[in-house]
Length: 464
Image 1: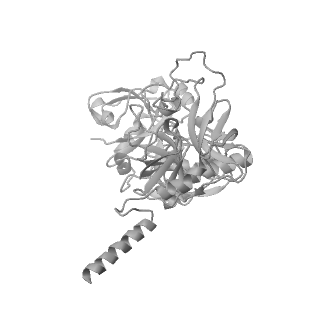
Image 2 (image 1 turned 90 degrees about the vertical axis):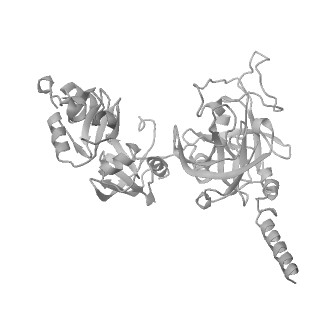
């Protein structure tokens, strides 16, 4: 009876695992997912505006490894991208509505000629671009068809790091290829993509997968495969997907308005490292440190100041500086939200009416009063700003670093010749003597606000 009972228990476990999409070994079973979700995934090929004159340009016919398209290597490549507008592009996409709306990456269809969409049942249709968005790399396509198999959209909030996910796409032209892995991280910030909190996974993604869906085990789309990290042109275990909630918001705006409106705060920010956190009296590094506020911006009107650390925005925590831009971008322009900041060791709440991101948004003493700091003090030679420099920088005063000597506090802080120190923490300084006084009144490390190359940043200085 004991052996029979053990056998029944084992059979029950096996059945339960199978019902949860797992095989007898406890590993996930993707067969059901692949069968049900594949009809919603499409292959996308774009014909060039004009065919190249050469016939030996190495184009792939999809039956082999072919060349790596330019969009594949434009992220993290070893050199500048080389545009090849005469090459056809291969990519993936997925149907989001029965009446023919399809999501893919903008870089798959951008600046191309005709767009051909192929379904798993071998039907082929010509698609048109409804709209595309540069900041999120999303494009919305439309084909003239009805009763198409649409995907089910999942909840990104429910997606946990370590959970299994699967991708379906056309790597190197091999249609309806299924690869699987786990979620490695969420809310990743990448270069030139500050408005997208990427999902990182180890799902194998290669040229042709771009624009295809990333599924959870329930067969719901949770992201759009967009980028990989590669140093040799091949998959190396790190891929990135655009969260589906971000993509669907973009798609809805493109469908309704033909463009995407994003929130804009009008600040330059930087990460809070351990040294800066200590200088601000914080127990640990967190938040987004405001290094510069653009004139006339929503942040200026709301009372933000350089040196503020944003800890919470619109009710959501700002754990790192990279977390703030996506939060701001998701706020509809014109809406008022609340931000929690740290200023001079005290938390404050500010109400700010978010503006709209656009191209435009992305857009004293004289020589006789010059002073010099004794190099032994900070390892710096300093002088007051001239009137012309004050006007050029748009500041009320400051101190220019003429020379960094030895291995003193100035060099350890990262100061460079040509830097202009304009504030200690949130307090502005007008001269070298003002800087000396601020340092004398402070016990321990301080955060210097520095202008360098037209941008502002904070550097932690620990006087000896």
